[in-house]
Amino acid sequence: MYDTYVSIDLETTGLNPKRDRIIEIGAIRVEQGQIAEEFSTFVDPGRKLEERITELTGIRDEDLADAPQLDEVFPKLLEFMGELPLLGHSILFFFEKSSSGPEDYF
Image (spheres, rainbow, N blue to C red):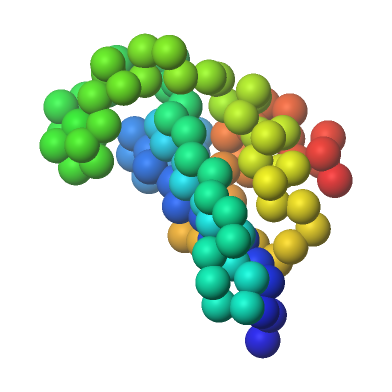
């Protein structure tokens, strides 16, 4: 079992990586069972949110107004993660959404 890893959580506009967008990324670095560092950012989806997404996530268009694009966030998140094991739900959604693709970073 790993004692150091990164756990990631995504909020999206839906469940389809080909159609939907990431709107928030949260990650924590865990070391020996304790949270050592946090990473959190909204992400500009490039479109207005549907009401059902706002109701589900609590995220509003106003929250995303000054948010960076995913291509700007992706390198910062990879730097935060380093080479640590990654734990999370829908992680492939994130990698499928990067226009550069993870191969440009690994």
